[in-house]
Length: 120
Image (tube, rainbow, N blue to C red):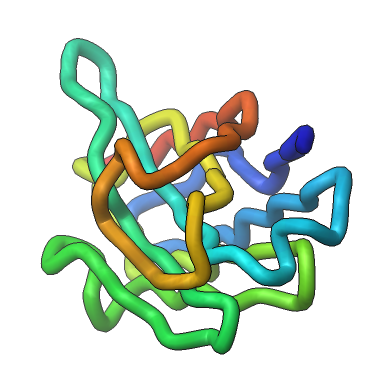
């Protein structure tokens, strides 16, 4: 399964971006999907996930500002009220099972990442 993420870019604080990720096979439509991010010099961290039935789960740092959604094998991340600390490379991923999970080791396929830069 190949994942292609897009939608990153440069935005001012308070602005919005929408990330998209498409999987190459419909297999992922029965799996949970998620978004992670990695800032320079930091470990990859969980952002949001969505189960195959569209139950969602968010990191506390983005709750109320980000919204994850899906359409079969595609997953989206609507990011509003962006802050400079949201600056990172964002990765989409397909989980091993159907649930939404924050555990990095529960994801089996990863996209190449898309850079989000939020200026102050």
